Length: 277
Image (cartoon, rainbow, N blue to C red; front, side, top):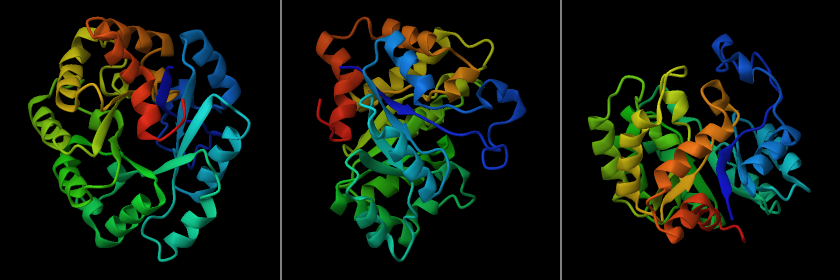
């Protein structure tokens, strides 16, 4: 079974979604299940994990509403205020939603480089373990050392790094990122989504050869059991079609065993998010 571990839905709002700049015109519109499902079918993908794109409980409710009755939406990664005094109450509120599998905070946008280590935030993430929820780590490369300390302090929580921590592919910078990713990968409670790469490269001129060194680092560091296929659709459309991204990964995975391919394309995602096959 093939599962896309990372995609988004939204009703485009130019104020709320100000991060979608005019240069990203192709995604300055609504994206809903009726847009995604034909794309998945054409690519031979059986389902997807829908991930929050804005930080509100309304976003979580929105995604859960879209997932209801849609077998292809296998799970939702939502948002809740992990620093809130009433966090347990909010988690209890969401708990009956079986498709809610985890949460994410857009840490890459936080001005405090030590945000992940704030006591109230760590206490909130620590509570996720009790409820069986995962946590997606969305950061930039400079935040990797703090992320390593963060996951070290929470050794029993399940973490996944989104988009390889957004390496500087366009600039060709790899050494520091590679060192920090290898260090993070030594924490076995951390997995990595192989997603979002094309938008970190030159949107018009990237090649598979430019991506390969970054893929090599992640596959070697995390191993075949902790890498998850993801598209970051529709954001990826600013630099690639869905089909082209699939083709890049299929070519890269060609030398791998059938078992390793199956784990990457879906089994690891189902296991990480604890979703029945």
